[in-house]
Length: 167
Length: 263
Image (cartoon, rainbow over all chains, first blue to last red; front, side):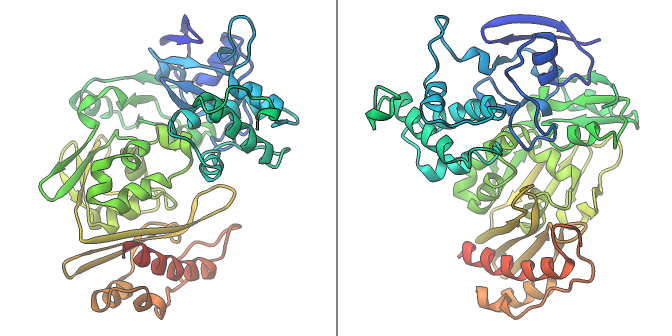
């Protein structure tokens, strides 16, 4: 069986996998990082989004062997060691950007990539278009968009706190 | 998904050798092939991962053309200043493919070689009159796309690059299914001197040229010129997303929008 070595959330792992093993299967079933979800399994819903080498990718449509040598970040890798949430996680909590929470890990991972790709600021329209690959069946998206806008302001240094009172 | 052997060659020559096995398949971004494998629509003996072949990457201007390597991802074409300056409609087309994550992985070579009726790239390749480069030859766009999921490429042949001529004007417009985001009907138009091309994707089983619209636009390059031309519904797709008649109507609307976008 092929061998894969990859760095996940700063930790290097070497695993034997079948050629057909998906990256999301490696993450969830071998590394037990179950924060990355499988929703549609057809690369449409985005619940499985992780970061590979600085880009958001659907891990249900990526072979584990194709991530050999890659640097992967999952939802578990965002918070600081002391438990302090990433600004995007904090914003999702503060703005009530989730209901059932199933899509949330993928939403947060896509949102961080989206904000990072717009270093000079991001409009509501750009946020909505940038979430094209992430489906949410509960929220109606409005609070997700508000949360991302608030987190973007913090990530870009335009405001210091996620708290809604800071608006 | 059935299991398969996995190979990652470092050169086109090695990949061609591995793909001599008729049951082996090439993979790059995997965003079309992997969903098909999950449905067990295919049972390849081996996947030959082309992503380690550096010579298949990149965008360069060669004379009066933009040559894009097969492994170049949609996000790279969408964000390329060189493509935007030479053929803005091509960068725009790439920016509309799938979603952000699909564009981060999907490649030009995969889209063109697969020839999905609803894929975007075939419209740009045919609409610009591009030339497809393979591991053994060069194929004109008019000869390349032969039917649903069928191209002129033979087993073991690898798409290496596509050469897009820089034209005077080009535009692309498509109507997407609001749920799947696949193209219901799209039109890519271009004008180079007196030569006009109109390529239609999404509507039929394979991308095709719309001769009546080409003649009308050659005489009068304006959205009004195509307004009166009816696309026949005879050979178009009918499915739960839309009837052939609806798609035929969309072709006319998208053609007008594409010409307007081209300016």
